[in-house]
Length: 91
Image (cartoon, rainbow, N blue to C red; front, side, top):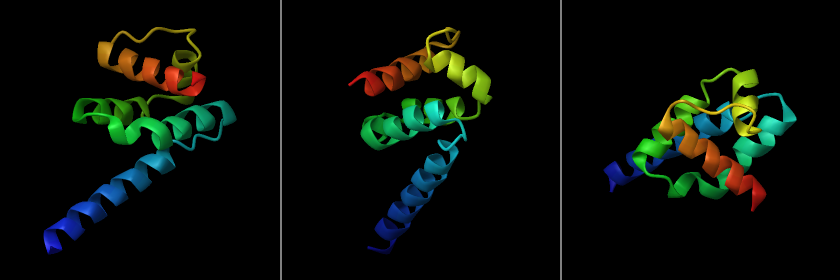
């Protein structure tokens, strides 16, 4: 029982950290990233979780270009997450 609480607490801490990283100070990015986190993040696999976290390390200007479709990601995992974020926003 104690381990379950620690795991849950760790997952909550990770989610809260990622949620904070989704707040970029640029409304367009905030809406896209936070919406994706709330709608789809829980259904991602481990590779997709890590890729989303990697994407959050990108500079805002690059992130905006990727998410607006004005730039293509060279990495296929990043491209997949970008597509998922764009699809979630369109839904």
